[in-house]
Image 1 (cartoon, rainbow, N blue to C red):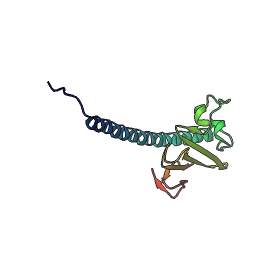
Image 2 (image 1 turned 90 degrees about the vertical axis):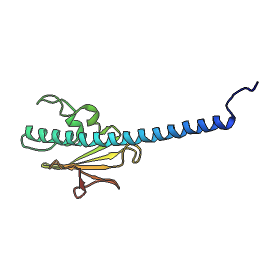
Image 3 (image 1 turned 45 degrees about the horizontal axis):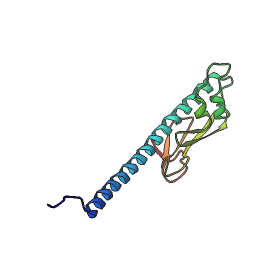
Length: 146
């Protein structure tokens, strides 16, 4: 009577296939996470831009906020304009760098905290509300609109 069993080669083939499938799944998951982070960075850039416009409309004389932290703090005019996490400048794998360049202008850069891991694209917006993106480094007003 002959016993039926798996050979070592058959077991190695199955283990190799499982490893290959796992590597593909992890790669896809990381790519999806980067895409999600980039989408959230665009939405957060719009949120900050809108909050700056609201702040501008509520101040006399009209001026943009000096920093992001002020947008995250509740003030005499009511509740905060953005959440505290976004006001810290770090959210969903992106760093938000806000600068009031004059009383009536500002710039906002959204950069991945770990390029290639948390996102590939860099974003820029200003008081016009137009968001641009660049994959090679810091975005600017002349880059491709989103």
